[in-house]
Image 1 (cartoon, rainbow, N blue to C red):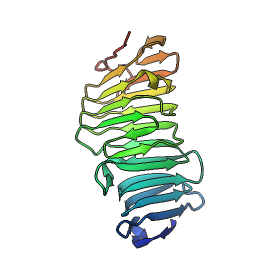
Image 2: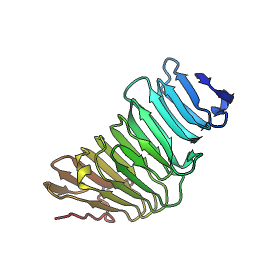
Image 3: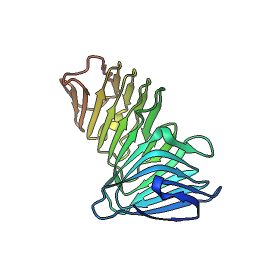
Length: 239
């Protein structure tokens, strides 16, 4: 990997660890060699704002500690993965994360064992550990932890697709009426007792096995292990 950094006190490029002086920003430019499809980040630490520019897909699987973080791709349409359990604001509270140019965002929380609430509204994903500005993201994926999680989608937030994969917890999904503008939604259950709550006011509805079709798009609700409809799912339609 070829990288340049500014205002950095110490860097261990072999292990992808970078840190800056207290309260200073950390700037990283990653020039992907020809054929490299993904850059993997193990750890980023700064006293100010982290700004990372890349030309490849980005996998932030390690920890990020800063006042805020900004991830930018030079090639529109790239994908980014975030392990949200490892995001931390040095100021306390959720870490502010911005993205530019990415089309796909995959949020990984599979290592988290306690329940968490994730909310999507006005172009922001709030995971309790981070407030993530979607920017140009059109496809959002959420891989939940093993606790009793709740996902609340208040509006479309510019998304065209949403996919949520649960684990063993009793997960609950809440889809507000304004979120039905998302053309394709998919909820994959596991062993838990999931409940899907959808506000279907003022829209035509067609229900088939494992799928709800509306005038705007479709909502699929199937088990990851079985092709049949999950019996544990329930649907709430508002008059």
